[in-house]
Image 1 (tube, rainbow, N blue to C red):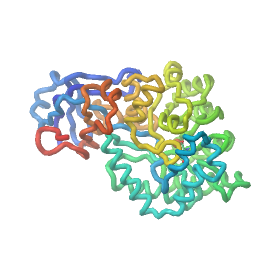
Image 2: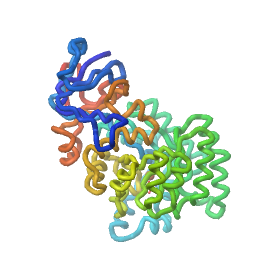
Image 3: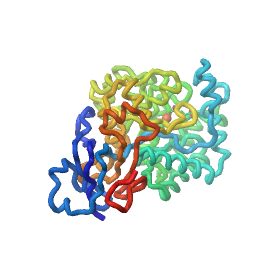
Image 4: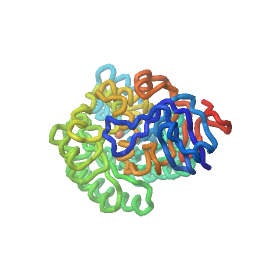
Length: 415
Ligand code: NIG
Ligand code: FE
């Protein structure tokens, strides 16, 4: 059905080709929706007479942004690790906790023991809450099963969620998260299992869009990551890397070498790594919640942007380093700790995040032809939204031309 959204106080169109500092803001705007797409957006004064006669929703002078894109999450897991949060706040390190049997390994134990139904129900609840925050696209990693059966189990949960939830899901295979305990002294055999057994099955069954590797001293080495990702690329998967999070492991350079869609974390990337990302147009995904929870440095986003790298902002939602899926909170943290302007932050959580998922030609912008995914925000403008962090400022959400939060049959968008 076709209709027009009117009386938008400020519209952020976030065109994909804009500089990251230019969110394509339009005051007193209107957006025309045809089916599941945006047919037109611009100043309300320029609405055509044909569009003026369409059924209209009054947006009450609020801010409208593209549906937010969370391009890095570990959505499916069982159990929590609150005791590690407290231990870290008392001075214990993330690596030390992993060495003692906590960390990723303990979530692997819990996730292996959980049924698909339990994992599905938990993830569904989180997706419901993410949608309420205005998030309409989510990348979701496996990586808490590690063995074939349990990695496939997580990816099958995502396949089921894709069928049953309005949020657009992009699954990623992260079998190379850490070496599982049962392969402790035979890591080559685990890399071989990934490359020869699990990856081909995942590609064949189209269970994942991307393959990711955690490149770090407690996880996988650079040569192992190259081997796994090269295999994944040959099988047609897009590439992502958890790179240079806790130390400089030359992950940024590897992402550039292999033509990855994104390199994520990057807190310890150096000038050489940043230059490599720029020359290969790899998106840098910043994860400020992980920096906050780990008492770690934040991404020096200005250095990246000045070098010509686009910087996405995502949550990294997981039970260890980032146990929150609040993307607007991550955006405000990025503004404060990564010295990003509200426009840079919003572009980072919409079109640039879509680019990290290879979706920038149809998702993350409110311009003609793009998916009618949008969020109406109870704020007078973008600056005010990012500054005045409310528990949830989002009052209505549209996904593919349908109201999925708020909205109604009347002519007003009811929030
Ligand atoms: O992105 N760095 C590796 N993986 C996650 C942490 C996962 C966990 O602690 O369970 C991250 O920070
Ligand atoms: Fe992560």
